[in-house]
Image (cartoon, rainbow, N blue to C red; front, side, top):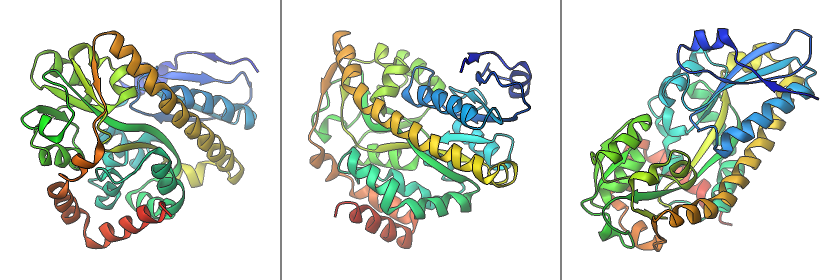
Amino acid sequence: MSQSFRLNRRAVIAGGLAAPFVLRSSFAMAATELRLTHPADTSHPVHTAAEEMVGRIAERTGGEINITIFPNNALGSPTDTAQQTRMGAIDFILMNPANIEALSNSIGAINIPYQFDDYAHAHRVLDETARDWIEAQLLTAGFSWIANFEWGFRALSNSQRPVNTPEDVQGLRIRVPPELAIKAAFEALGASTQTVAFQEVYLALANGLVDGQDNPVSTTFAAKFYEAQDHLALTKHIYATIMMCANPRVWNDRLTEEQRAIISEEAVTAGATARAEVQSSEEDYIAQMEEMGIAVTRPEVEPFRARMEPAYEQLRATLGEETWTTWAELVDAARA
């Protein structure tokens, strides 16, 4: 089946910001037009997997479902687009659960620092032991959960010194997103944190407003933050997922059961593809940054985890004892 990209002028005008990536099928029949937004750069595995996904959905539904992709925060900030999806202005979203902490404190448990042993452990928690719990939390917050994609484990970059121990973080001025878990983790390590919007991070680094930032390796590479940094530490302090969700009214009322099944199947496939590509590309991105002069360190995790008690106390108070205990049991169950 031949497919082509073309700009949807009405969507651009309605969005009022940036031109979307539009994957159109060649079917002549009338289609249900839906919008999907996400914060990833167009070179990121999350975006490329999403492109493939919407193409397969169009093909499998015989042209009944066409999904327009708005990447790179084209329709607003992650928190803004989460609200728009919840209200129904946007149909689908790929979002970090931390972006809806204002709507659901409990969902912030996913971002507790140093709780996951590795990628496989994180996947078992999100896909298996905590699946029903996460789905219920998202529905209560106003979202229908569809599938898990991936950002990856977060790494710390900075312009001042290599990071091998927790003491090396002390005193660094670190940009953080508006997410409590990340802020609490770095403050527990003695860093000074400053909240800066993602689209302003590069300039903040280049101008020396902050010394460093934390993001998954693929995000640091795609956003070219390394151009304003000298050091990258694979601290793996927080595993960052990105979940595909829908507005519940769109999901249940505008789509048939068969269409929902097709979208769910293709989203799970795309999520698995994104996960595999994020992990396989990490070492390649690291090698490329090293060739550009970035010094890369791989600190032992345990000394950092041992400093997290102040962050855990703060997060436990925010999440509540019941959520903290329930989530800890789900995380531990995935180690069995």
